[in-house]
Image 1 (cartoon, helix red, strand yellow):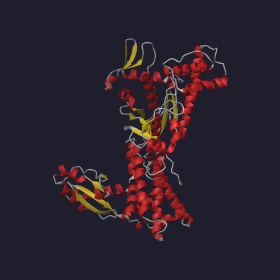
Image 2: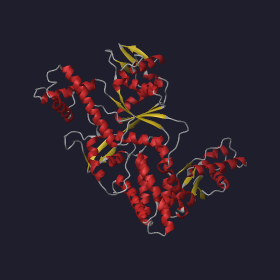
Image 3: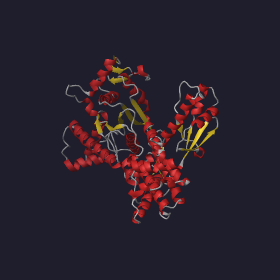
Image 4: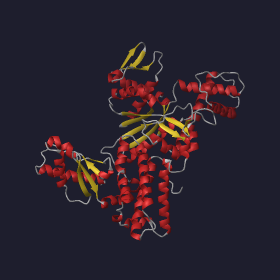
Length: 559
């Protein structure tokens, strides 16, 4: 049982005793929830339960706090209590219970902080979903980091997470892409043909066209324009999708499925498409109507600012109809909850998408995480163009220059609703000013100490016999306290979809270790203390490595 849970149980016992004895007249006893004090100098934990009881018990909160403190049963967890302010109860923990965190970490290993939900929850987490008409940009990289880390953290907290990439491979943009490649192909063959304004003009389009020319020669020069467009659309689609998959795989993303939008329009064994089924589900609920030759979804019934077109007058399906079919398909695959990660520029789509789920009878099933974009800098100056192509800097170029670890850590360094200033030169630094280097260096330094211990004949696996009661120095207890926060942090980060909290935690734990290393000897100490401190830093190594792994960042043993 986590220290917080043990302490809450003790405070709950005291509160119950006050009620049973008649000292507190309460019809309903509040939960003795605890929180970390803003200033850790005030203690390890604090409770506001006395203030929450005050009105119902008709007593001064400080008086209630005194009754609770006096009723606390004998235990080996609480070293001291203090009543502060209007009725806060501050608790200081014993060194013994704090030091026992070391044993808990070393016993649990990579499962430390793992928990189970009261009820299973199967979650579909959809993110990145870049159009297969061009290379991923830096913003996509932020969603790749955010989605993957969110999935890792949620799994550690007990969620069943299915990661999905929605491939927008249906619609006008795919034909425009195919035509763009076809025109570049003809230009390479010497044809005097201009690229229309609505086409994709990036150099990657010319690269694809050149690849087709090198492979097939002039095979496509004299075929019909439609046949050439369709062929090039498919060749370009495969090339770009593979490029996206390769980039994401290199970045450490592992999607459960790449879901094709086209599949929504393909008949199943009963002859119905996913679009048909979603539309029929709307009709069955009475939220579809016809007007001016178009088919509409009555989304205003669920708070949307206006109703939305599903099928245009000409019979063409809207993008929103595809979105409806896709989300309906997700729910038919028995997911309990859907999470979509979108760029902040898509905020206008949230209400209509929430409305469609509610119309089908799934209120609250969709959660949209909106993320701000990335400002790319070099030595503080904005970077807009690639040195190689003179066009936008692609995500692949960024990780080529900076590396996966630094890119991931810095992309996750802030809440998704905040802009990120990503300075390429800062990210490449290998010193304490670079947060990912700072954390990784702490892990590598611990590994170095443990290697030295092994060279001296001290077996790491024998540290279970270490006397953890010797860990009573402030620097040692600070590490124990910080490691004890981990389980609660994981639950919070998972619940709030906020993996950025782990980047902050990793830096705080690394900082606490560096302070310990500066002030406390390890190898050169007398044997018993050396043994206990080796066990301590081995636990810190475990938690640092685990934190980094949940962010998708490596934990090097040497640097």
